[in-house]
Length: 391
Image (tube, rainbow, N blue to C red; front, side, top):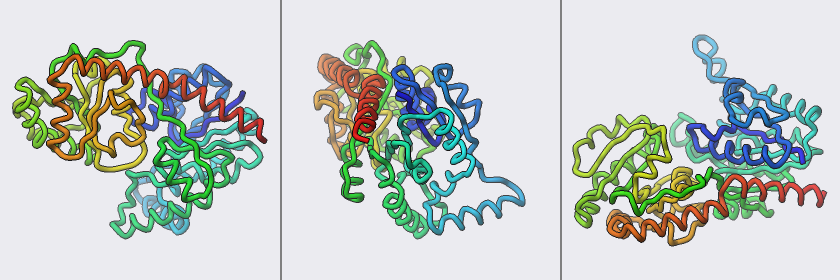
């Protein structure tokens, strides 16, 4: 089977953002099971860095037009505002004639059996793909959670209304619709009055699980602190949850890892707290902790950092929003909403190394079966095959 994958960035499993890593892991597994072509926004350098680039019989990167400086800046802003009459702003920024041309060239020369389009901003290219079976996968229930217009509250509200209209206009053109979580699929199915399937999250699963039962009583929070909710969550854990952990477990520690952590510098020196900054060896980091502690207060989709922890065999403590899309066995994750509840859930593993070890083993076994790139690629190809047979 010949598949063309279309994405708003290079699908690189080593990408520093969740979407790129997700699609990179999936694309690598697809490339091992079928003929895979890629058309993406990005640079040739970014695409050449993809580790499975040599296995792609077709690959093209289209530079995304960035906001110019100097005299051209006002003209560019005027163009975006003009497009914003009918398109949400992120979609407007991703409409480029050269990308549509790249898709047309790939259809004519690579001749895919099925085209996979990823993320909301690429749905606007569906009208140009009629005649080839298409699978469109939404990653955030029709409205990217972290998009901001920069035009204030009313501007953001207008943008959300435009996203709603955009979904109704473009999504029905796909032959098959998918979402990444059961919740997102149900929301889109109601909105569109048609079936929306779930393609599970994808994460690279190490062959060997970590051993959280052998680690000290240490909890980890991991994130990029350019994202304000990560700063808020880290401060909440350090100020309100860590004292409760140390009250219930004298040696308990909280590690805060991730880049751009300057906003947390005032937390240094608190008993049991360690600020690590960026950690290039994620496997070693996750192998040094007993659990990941990460409540989430904003957004849809699923949490790549929590899925990554589970795949490495590290149990997680989070809240209901953090667990969204992670249909992991209850033995591998615990949920709580308030600070005392989060502390109590974490203490169950901080004070019981054997229980933490068993929870980590359950997490790793689940990940191997359900969210490994190979498993999800097989599922995606099976759906593509069914689509071709039904057509």
